[in-house]
Length: 160
Image 1 (cartoon, rainbow, N blue to C red):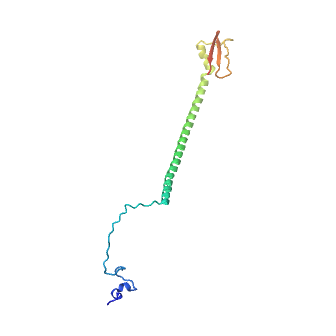
Image 2: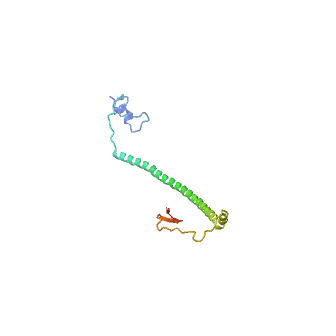
Image 3: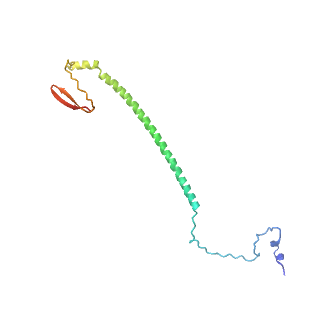
């Protein structure tokens, strides 16, 4: 009878063979494969607490970064808007100061006695005579009533 070594020299030789891959089973023996239906629908994957915590931290960091950027952006835009508003108000103040100066010059010209006297004479006005003017009392308090007298009639008026 033939021994295994004589009939299967490729399994027992020390040199690597160049032929097909060797199997641990006997060559020429049929290899049988069976399919097995596996139902994994009832399996429930266990939650990994560490991975869940890491994902929550990453999600929080990813939400916090844009929130910080938007906060900075809102502050920057409002600062720029305030700068424009300040410049506009300064320009308006300068215009009002120039208008005020022009109106003061016009007021001083319009109330100048040398200009008003010929106009008053033309309208038939004269300078007041001695005793014709009576000063009105100045109140001690800003909103107290003031009594003015004219030809024997007392008049009460409130200065505001």
